[in-house]
Image (cartoon, rainbow, N blue to C red; front, side, top):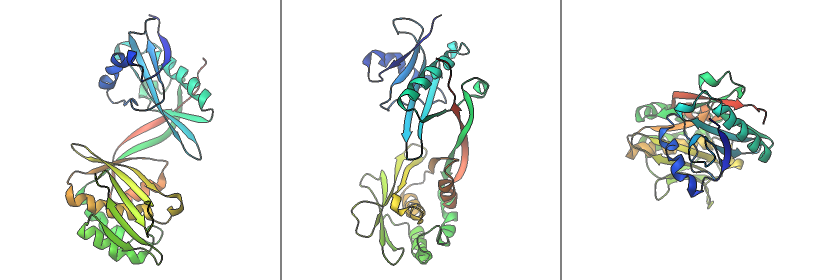
Length: 286
């Protein structure tokens, strides 16, 4: 059977039904279905009605590098026929043509780690969890953190009060120059830290409430506030405020390469519950 790889527009309604089963039957692999980048699909017929494989990717850009996180899936009945290699190889060259300095990463099952696409381990992504019990145990550590962690060790008594009383909103004098305020957004989807009288928050994180847990993501600190313990201060306020009204554990994902974040989350009581290894994609002949 002849399989042909095509680059397609995910918004094209002609393919909506064709791809629907990929987003329900792809098991442990999560395809990016809400991004603006094109899909790469493998069809076994010229009419593009029988899809056997699908690849999506998500581009992340920052000052130091550009990464394409690739998610690819081949239907079980068509595996071990070279479809995955053809799919990823085509996508690799197309992505590199648009983003020449881009690094491609993704999850390789063990049986694929000997194929030509596999370029070695890029990083490990950890799933970390914080329960109310662990948060309570971590509270003293947050209060006695040194100046490298918190903006000012003199603020520990106030932070201890915050953790103990778990208010949804509190003010803490963290140094001689600023007053810090924390609060939830009106819909409780975001938690914000304000510095002094500034109109915009200097740090923020987001919450996604699920049935059995709450996902913590998007922890962000303004560039001019980094290295001052603001991230710890944000979480030191968020954690008791959250567990005052919720019993479900907090979970988050963090990369092994982000050592500062790993240290911060461990310091706040988060524990690693599982991990996934991401690998580099290497080029294949077109």
